[in-house]
Image (cartoon, rainbow, N blue to C red):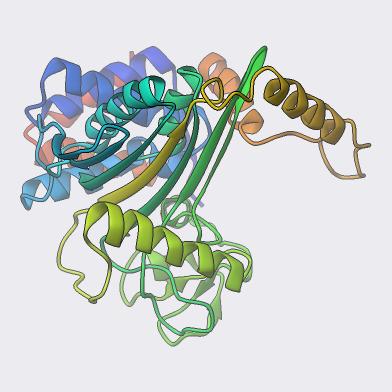
Length: 358
């Protein structure tokens, strides 16, 4: 079993800045990438945190990730935007796409943003949080162009990616409600973390390369590959299809339909709907009714073995507070992979190690 390093936030951030500089990124891009990834770790989503940097390094070295790229506008229909991410860092082009969509939604009341050809957009909740901070409700359907890792309901091998769905609802006087999940039972990055730690995953999450049930996460990490399963059986599968059709075919212009495993790229398409509830005429009743509902739900008595009822986003914010104060755990295997990524980018891994150790 692997154990964890515990890194304090300032030191870990400094170390990751050193590494990301190896991509040749501008200072602003370094900040955007590092802050996004470290925040994912702080919120407990290690699958979308700094452990992605080895994959990013491989994608960059094969030419599938372009540092210092920005979004370009393919179509401007006022409240309808089609954007190309130019395979730039998703942490950069995702934020740019949301900024453009927010501006239009505030102007017109709503905006549909179709973003294609973005490298890994990371934790999609970050984009819902950006919209919520501007007072906007948002929906996000995302597809993944990479090695297929999720089986269709009833299927015996992988045919598409984890295809996340996300929604954000801002409410006055309290943090926003942020729903963000992969349509697979578990995010692929979480199986990578489990594999690196030498842990198993629960039954019903995975099938092996023969289509048989397994609890060994290696079947989603190293060949021969099996597949993740969708959550809720046919329900998660149905939502994954919609993410592929909307985030892929409609927004990004690309869907998963081959078994090419030769590339390390992770290309996302994202179909986002942004809405200003003020322009809809829903305030203040919307806010009052939403808060009344949340209060009602959270007043449910706690069942034995459970914590008090939370709403989406609460657990991540609690983890953020805890890890900011107490440090960020990174398993030994993942840390060694990160140091290896630094070396592949021409960054002295000893410098990264020293910066992380403070």
